[in-house]
Structure formats: C-alpha cells, structure tokens
Image 1: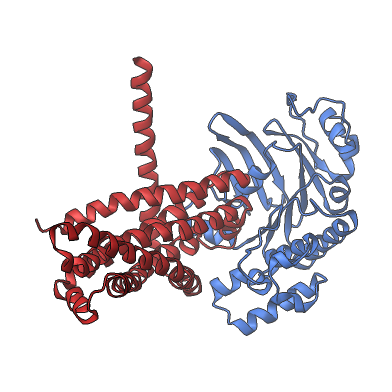
Image 2: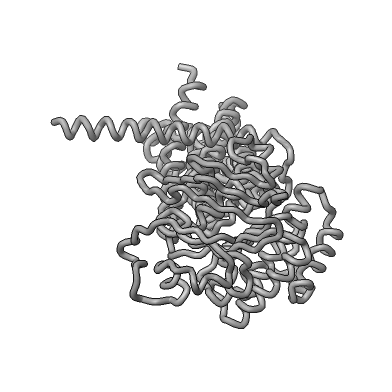
Length: 266
Length: 258
C-alpha cells in the first residue's frame, strides 16, 4: 500500500502583480524525509516554503499535509496547522526585545501558559542539547554570534516537537565549520523528533549532508527532483551548472533560461 | 489636459485605497484589543515607553510654550490695557489647544518614529513572519497593545503638560512681568472650566491613537531594506503630524459652543 505523502503540492502557482514567481509546482515529500530545495537567488524558493505553512497563500493549486488539503481553510485551522510546523529563517528572525529563553519558549508560553520557571528550564534544556551553555538563556539575540543565533532559532523551532521542520538557508553567513555543526544539529533534531524536513540551501556541501531528496526550482517550476545521490547525474544542464557552481551554462543572473520540466523518480 | 485629469483621478484613487487600507488595519487592531489572549507585558512596556519616557520632552515643550505664551499675550493685551487677562489666556490656551497639540506633535516624532522603525525592522528581518509561525497574530501582539497604550498615555502626558505649561506662564507672569502670585493663580482658576481640560484630554486620546496607528501601519507595511524602514519612519511621523492637525480641528468643532 502506498504511503500517504507528508507534504504534497500540485500545480501551485503564485504571482505578485505581474511577477509570476511559481508557475505550477508539483512536489511530494514522504514522512520523515529530508527534502532540500535548491535554485538561484530570487527563483521563488522562499515563496514556495512560505506557502507550505500558510505564510503566503498560493493563487491556485493544492497543498496537502498528511492528505488533508490546507488551502482555503479559515484562520483557526491555519493556526492549528502551524502548530505542527517549526521554522527557522535565513537571518534567525529572533525577537530582539526578548531574551533567549523568552525567544525559545515563545509559543509554549503563549499557547500553554507555561510559568516562567518551567519555561526557563525548558529553554536551558533545549539549548544545551544544541551545544550552547545554559547561561546564554538570559542574554539577548544581539549579544550572540551568528552561529549561536542560528542554534537559538533552531531551538525555538524544535522546542515543542513539531512534525514538520522548515529551514530557510540554515547555514548562510556561517563559516564552514559552524555550518557543518548546524547541519549535524538539524540531522540530530530530525532523527530525535522523527520529523519531516524541508530546507532551502545554496550550500552544496550542506545539501549533500542533510538531503534525502533534492528539488531544483527554476523559472517557477521544479525542473528536477530526485535522490540526493543522483544530483550529480541528473542530466539537466541547469542542475549540473548549479551543483558544480559553474559560471558558464544556461543559468544566468541576467536572463533565466527556459527549461522543460524533467522529474526523476525518487 | 487628458494627462492632468488622469493624474488627479489616479491620486484620488490612491488616496481612497490608502484610506481603506488604514481603516481596515485599525478596525482589525481595535478588535484584537478586546479579544484574548491579552499581552499584558507588551502593553506595560509600551505604557512605560510612551507615558514615562515621553515626560521630559513633553514637559520641556509645554514649559517653554507656556512661558512664551505669557510674554506674547502680555505684549498684545497691553496695547488695550487688558494685561490682567494674561493668566486666563495662558491656562485656556494651554489646556484646550497647546498642551494636546504640542504634546501630540512631540510624541509623534518620538514614538511614531520609534514604532515604525521597530515594527519595520521586524518586518524586514522576518520577525513578523516568525510570529505567525509561532501561532501568534502579529497585529494582536504588536499593534493592539501599542494602540491601547497610545490612547491611554497621551491624556496622562497632556495633563502633566498642562500643569507644567501653566506653571511656565506663572513663572514668567510673576518673575518677569511682575504679577502678584496670588492674583495670577486666582485669575488662572477663575475662568477655567472642567470642559476646557476635558476637551484637551479627549484630543489627546485621539492623537495618541492616531500616532500609534500611523507608527504601526507604516512599520507593518515597510518596504525592504534600510531604505524601506527609513521611508516608513518618515511617513509615520509626517502622516501622524498631519492627522493630528486635522483631528484637532474636527474635535474642536465637535465641542465648539459658539
């Protein structure tokens, strides 16, 4: 019997005025699978990710989580859905005016009326699992380095054990060693929680470490999707150029190349 | 001619669209003020920021305005031997007009800008999206407490500003113009009515709401990058200042007993 995909997108489109960002995205992610979305800057990866948890509403198409359609639902249903997601943003998006423990336990405190002492304990426990000292909980985001902020953001995303984790460029702006540590923490968190993860990344070393499956977005569609190990032999020029970081090829900053959709089986 | 009419039409449509967006934004925010959960910590923080930390700037503004008003009134009224009305003119001008308008404009510069910059920065650094992902409604968490705090705090600030402004007039009246202190005080209270103070406080509440609304609205819809936040901040201060002057006339007209 076929397993119901954890996430299933069909013909998802999204435009901002005359800018057609997503032109018909079809994609599935299996339960506990780690999907990494790659693509050039501005190709619509972040828009696609924000469609998954309802931060952006697609113009057309279907998005199903565990086989349940999420588009067209009311605000309350959307809020229930978001409780099943954890998300980190490219630049952390930690709340500047709140301390680290307040950031990490934000949802728990507001949704479950957790008292201060319990919240601090949970925050300390979560960030120590991610390799930070417990004493950090009383500091503010501006007092931490970029790598530490990413860990705190990761702690905030996983603290209430979500089913689906979304990571928007988790290693951007980090040195390779810290990037490797963040990747390890993502893999650990996924294994511990049994979560399905969707990650956006430009960092091919990171993609190779964390991906079960890779999908490349170009010109508003998925031009290739397949197992991470098949990435080097995709047979798609755009994927080849992107994966190997070549300056010459169909992908240019000035004029995105049109390409037929080609899907590998995953 | 065709292009001119087209421009007028486009401007009118843009104005109406902006008016509609701001109205919807404010109605949504006001609704969240009365809907649980209530973010008391946010409200308290805003009350301290608006009410307490604006006291020096409002106090200084009204103090010197009251002093200048006493001098200018004296100069004018001395020309037809009505110098003894200076105290009455100072207290009525400060409570009905100068206190709320000057406090409103100063707070618009201080708080309107700060709200737009803070919320705008949250917008461009994805903190507002992060709130959404954490099952928290950004307008309820960020905007509703600010609107409530602005509406509560401005009347308090204006009340303090009224006292300081009248005291400024008293200082100049007594120590510079040579009025008798007891007579000056008696004249100050003689024609002052509760409705004069109430009018100023009603204006202050309206101004406080408008300042917070403009700060939050422009910050919430801030464009990308430092330039977007800068533009949002400027727009918040300019629009709040203009709305204060317009609302001042409307409220004065509503309470006018001609």
